[in-house]
Image 1 (tube, rainbow, N blue to C red):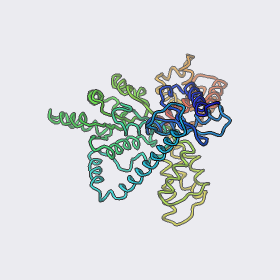
Image 2 (image 1 turned 90 degrees about the vertical axis):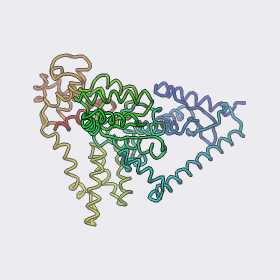
Image 3 (image 1 turned 60 degrees about the horizontal axis):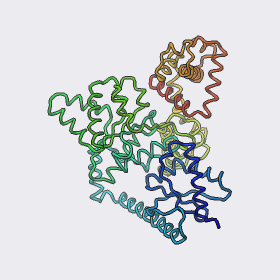
Image 4 (image 1 turned 120 degrees about the vertical axis):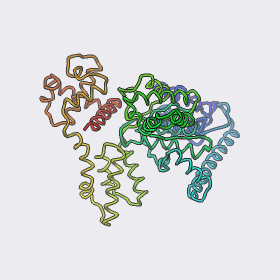
Length: 480
């Protein structure tokens, strides 16, 4: 007679093998089959953090593999099981595990209720006042929390890494660099880490600072030895250092030297560092190599512009906050047409809700289009004076090439890819014809058309290409 639990255990092994074949990052994962019951495969994920991470990163894919490998209607459930057992377990143990799951859920529900009670009465709570005092000392804004960050596919990795850091600072991922364009949530995640640590650990000292303020403090401290010592002690005796916009430090050799030594001191004593940047650290042209190598020791995660579904989720949250509901037609129009960042999407919503609040007139789609027209045209206005030469220079710099490389005849893969991207952007962002673009690249009309078609076709499936296109556009916007 076939042991049912053993059958499901073997099925899980096959599913996990397929996941690892397709996702090398899952090789070191700790996901163990415990038991199967009522159409569910219960998988021990070891810790609450791993449970959240596995759910976000792998659950959808694992359920697809499960559907392929089994005719039964089954689903995978992650949980945290303190009791380690053999893969074949008795009904009695199953009941105990089920009881454990119930207790965990009840505990988590109670924790959520207790936390909500604390927040609602924080003005009268000594602990809340203490947190508020520490928050002011740390330069943190209480609005930036993990709960208020709306996660989508474009931000899930950065969110989960940030959350893990807040639970185990100095251990989980150190250092961490979060990079991406303006208005995508870098500062929100950075400060969420600090706020979460303050609320859950009253022993750790946290400091949030922009790179510009860090630089100005350093310059002001150069007057005397005591001042420079105070500056060093301030930043080298923290448990968690959060620095925003490190791209500001380019071409500033003195402050880079100071950050290098601060970095070493904190890293050697296993204290947490998190930085944000507007691009990958290796793309900063005027940052010292040894400082770049320090940033690369830990984990670098990116934030990308939100996809349609994430934008809809953001609008729904804003609807709830404002107690005002934009109709589906207007929501769809906003999410289809605002393609820059979350900040612009929120600004458009604020404008529409304010119009309704102050006029008490119900919005129509035509009126909404009229009100947000300036927002939609802002990107076009910023790019309207672009020349093909400026696009060539921005693309060449992004790929660490020269304009001559893109205009020349070299045909190694890196140059060809960069050249085709520059041609595509020249057609997309300017009014020049393919023939006119060809003059700038010293290429004929058919070569230009081929490059445009190739990039257009690859966009639908090439994530890296889309990220490159978005990054170059952002750099062009900053130059305009």
